[in-house]
Image 1 (cartoon, one colour):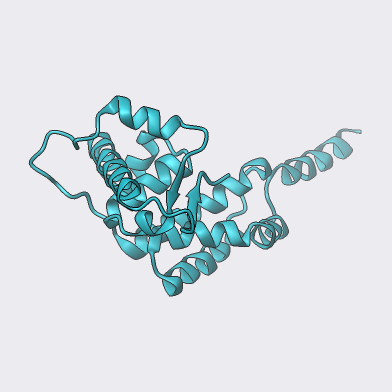
Image 2: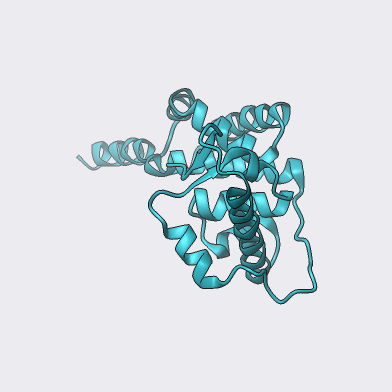
Length: 186
């Protein structure tokens, strides 16, 4: 009886973790969304594809990710690969923070219908684009963004403020209904 219980424990434990097949399924089902994330970060189709392919390879090699976290893990691996590929660094400005206030940032980032022109997001500086995509579209915490990007939380806040400022300016200059929109990624 004890032997049978000991044999079942490793099997139950193995079922808790994502398998190679789970990651293949995730990448097949979410390919468009994962590529879109990679493209937003890299701004280059070839680099985006490379980050996606390497991301799948990295995920398949990982064997200790909880199954219910596998989709989040796949996105995180793509973000990490894009960071390695692009090496985004903070831009240090003389201003204390951007002209966009924290209340404006909170209002913009919590709006249910937040849409931004794809071109405007792609025109952001690398670091600002990474911070915007990670923190606003993917809901990474400021702490996680800072850890992944190797910077301070203050630099994350400043970059997000600059990004929102530029996106608001861009949307006010050209409110064209035909432009593709970037919406919160789920």
